Length: 184
Image (cartoon, rainbow, N blue to C red):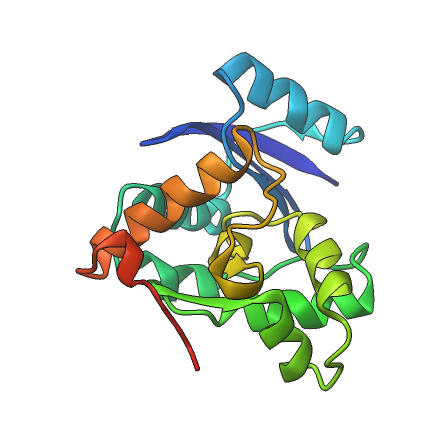
């Protein structure tokens, strides 16, 4: 049974969906709470809105803390079980690497492609990040284009939202936004 709930964060109303296997997806804020709720209904057509269980409440708490700039939230997000039953295997591999990017750090699409052993797959990595159903649990906003270009971002607000998330995390890591370093 698929369920979803919406909740407030420092950036606005977010959404989360879950199944018996774990978190099925999460949603960064749309322009307002009503649009976030509508986006959840479209993304998860068979889901019913419900009160979160204990596991989902832990996920909500970690997302709220991450978006408020709490540097300890990343570790809690790593512990969440994700239901990836409908996520392509390549995307799962990309998301596994992306989940491990520490707060205050970034990688490029090309660096992730190299880590996958597929140096020519930067665009495929970009598509996988664009299809990420778990933002910000899988922090695709920490993945940049070549030479630090922000690249695209499918959440409401596009690249501006991505840069805002990076700025929040930079402050949480005790950095200036421009100091966010790559892992290499």
